[in-house]
Image (cartoon, rainbow, N blue to C red; front, side, top):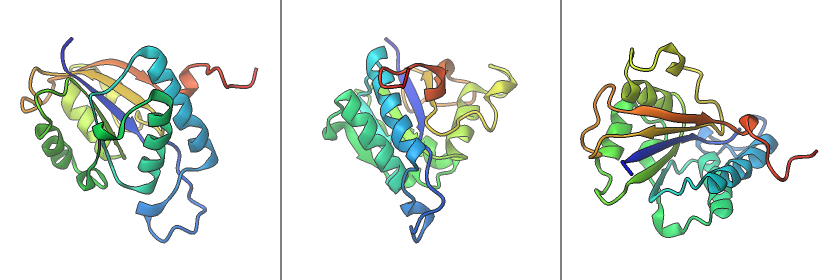
Length: 177
């Protein structure tokens, strides 16, 4: 198996909240439903990361807690990285450049527009067509990418999209019939 990067945008967050800052906004009801669904789907598919790098914002932490519970992800592979919140493309590339050689499948849990900028950079402007532009990574959406042999070898067009999934794309055992 080659290296893989899993981009995951946090689940739907609440806007009508008493949170004093954007950083502290929690998940909305839909987010609290979708995050565990995505975790169950990932577990069923065998998408188990070696390392999870997550923004420490409240909504990403809550998303990851739901997913980790469904997948049995251990705390020792979770890295809360301040650089992921509000990240530019350059910030996210630096985060990934620092990943250990031993990590073959890395999950990056974060925010737009950073995740979409990273996706566009990694797949390249012409490689996959225009569908990989802005607006693709909606809340709770997962993008699975095949990556170069080294995390330090990230360049424009170096990755290929394996799949894109969001909770609306699959049925879950806990969905109402």
